[in-house]
Image 1 (cartoon, helix red, strand yellow):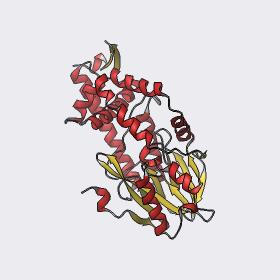
Image 2: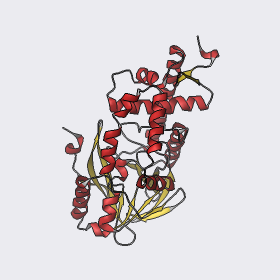
Image 3: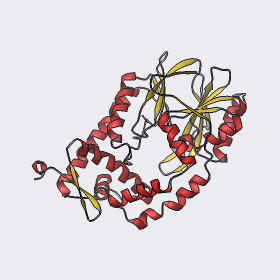
Image 4: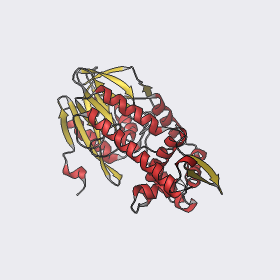
Length: 337
């Protein structure tokens, strides 16, 4: 049975902070959380909006009604980052409430680009995956599902921004904003100094490690992410409210544990390159994950492996060379047996 049906869809994980749990279509990630709290203006604040579609909208609306409020009471919609399972319902909620959508400037720019999609940008990204080992035929299978997904999307129109150093008020307290790129470049977390509560989106998760995928821009997402983990560890959150999974304490320890996981994966990537000789990123990914990968998993595994290989390359630990249209990664000669 899916995890979404094993947990209540509406809960209060911390006094004054309500949570609506919504399903996602992603394998291994069956649910995502929406948080709701009293706003400073007497209305409601919604943090993240789950997937696009009527089902998500109905679940959030039902949660708001369970609080004795209405959708028109929403005064602000905050987004932790620009991934569809976190911003997908923002457009419908904005239409129903008239509330402004508030996010990091990078997230705002990305949402604005989606309103006028650039087909050449998507084609460029697909070509990059081909350069790193995937076949063109394999990638063509992504076009149909992507077009179908985007056709369901209602994008927000009125948006304003928050950035590191800003403070916002909701849930009977002030929350400091911290920019935490890596999982997604425009990611932010909310930290309430009064009690150490932290709404983290996908920066730190309790049971799984957030996906860190490479997409050319920015060139070093893993480096960014490790800096973000250090930032969260220094906050030493009393309780973490994540985008997926259950709330957890010892947030600093969990952030350091995720950083240690990536340090181990970097060592494995380097070992594979040394052992295998020149190899493209997909070959290295298949060795790194050491199991048969489904189509969706293989794309994520390739992007995550690239984030580690590029982290190593930018620091001089590995090199790469274009051979017959494919990038091959290699180890410095002094590391090769």
